[in-house]
Length: 508
Image (cartoon, rainbow, N blue to C red; front, top):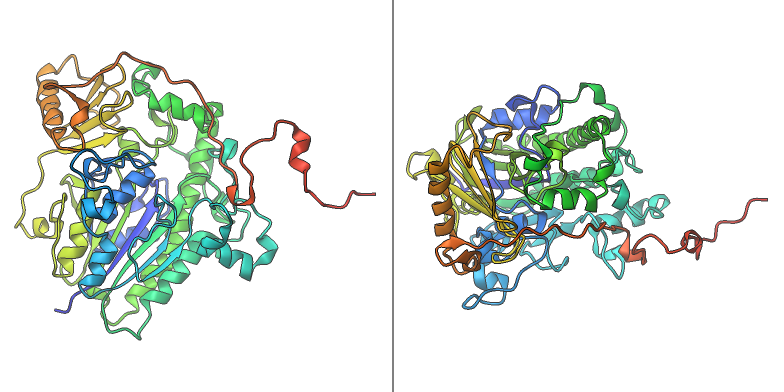
């Protein structure tokens, strides 16, 4: 058989529990359901660092955070002995590897690199980032397309929806559905999939921005879901839910402290609306794949970078190790090779995606992941545990997770706090078993200590133990997200200052 065409499709901040065919009766996802029927769904896929930039570097390098040295939305300095540059440290990015083994490569959508315009190795790249960067938005392909082709909307500072204090408040897109970034991304993907003037197989990476907030689905997706029919929040005690101080800190930072349970249901309805919009755009991509004469030999890997608490555990956002934040949907299909309509329970990391592409291309390179395709054939052992890290090892805010088939253990350096959840008996993570299951706690703590004995994570250790600090509550601060490409940095000191340069004629 010829080498397959390979299509990676990624969403941003999509929870694992948002696909109808996999058990969510509240959501309408006909095309995600169609993709699940086409192949295999993995029910235990985890982001080992559930933060946008960190997760994306794991995907493009095949390396875990101690090697990438990305534990947040910025890069940490390499430790002694590690090369300064990312590709020198980890190896060439996935797109560059796929080009070198004979694939036509294209990337479309959000790549969230640091710096924002970093070369990530695609032969063809269309960027559509969630915010625009100084000095102007011309560097963003979607932003410049919208300004050029539809200048009537160029006045919009934030065409994907308002941010800052509106980040988790329900909105409607200021654009019609067919002009939204997701639709534009799907258009570019279809163009590349149907392209016939290149005999090479393709490796495409399609990266949607949704359902990452702001939650502003276009008409009619904004009114698909009745908030009164949304599922209830998953809430433990505030004290236990906020053991990770990042959760109340971020809740305040993105203005979500204003959200009550009733408003949370409205927000979830818009979140589901965003996913429905994405699903519609995904359908157009799947149609293009199925129209190809070799459609059975197209490998599709659908995934997200992480999830979102979305009000569960009295919190919002990601950057923590509750299931809603660190577990993501993963669908893998290749009809010519893999079985259809099955669910697998093995522990999967984002680092494993590198090996999916390179193994299918006939040039396997695993780096720090495992060979999923060989595992599915019975030729590779599944992992017994998976370790994740957030924030720089050795810092006050560092935290680490280990997950097994039955248990999840979380250690937080801030206060030396610990959580232990039985995944089978307590899937909602409401009962901390650290005291009642001390033997299990000790076993998993030892696994975490062992995982930290690598160059990029050794600072997390104090001798043979995990380094802990006296508990510190961080000073509350708000995050301001405006259109920096137009010089808007925040709210003005005086309200009238916002009107400077506003040249609308004074009404008579």
